[in-house]
Image (cartoon, rainbow, N blue to C red; front, side, top):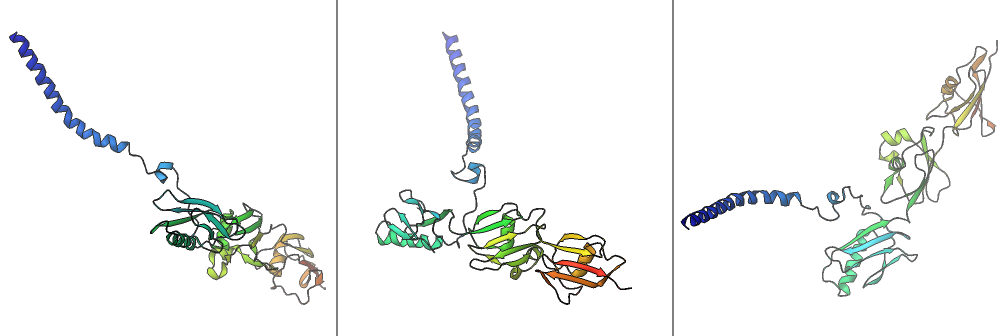
Length: 292
């Protein structure tokens, strides 16, 4: 009987010792385990594994066809995704029609806020408006570019930025861009090298409705014949002169003379053409024989 009591006390001591030894270990491992199971906030870049796209610039002005999402920060009982209708309005819960056309997202947010306060729905709401899709403002980009088509304008862009967004010019692209402003009939020429290295004055802002075209070098050529070593057609580059055009044609033959330069432009002879004059698209250059 005495032996049984001793064994019982011994077992109890062992159990108590084991519990005092394992308790600190548990206290040390628990924080590490909980930290490893931490879940990123819903909607964060860490949770989704990707970086969220940048929002539309706050200076963007809404127009017909654009889709905007309006919500309240910290509240889930108000929110709507609406498309700007032909009359320039959107329909929202509680307050009905709101003018959205020709308003920035900041202005629209404040309009909605004031309407909710005036209607007695909320005391001091924080309204957020985000552009979901753009249909009202775009430019047309065509020609020898990486991605021709309609390009939405989610903010103010310069011509060089539009060129970058469409992947630049292709291998057979000319060295300049033709920009036709909305409502204009004549295109303006901008050389890509100046867009890249020049100042803001040489890189115009692009507006909705503008058309951008980069021709192929195969369409931007001049022709040279007569007393030159390599007659034919050649692409035009920025600042190309008749003297440089003769070099592209392999130079003047032994029987030719630079003084016998003749140029036909737009179907008419060009009077008093000089070697340092600039070549135009479609020019037909002829070098005549010299007099012995």
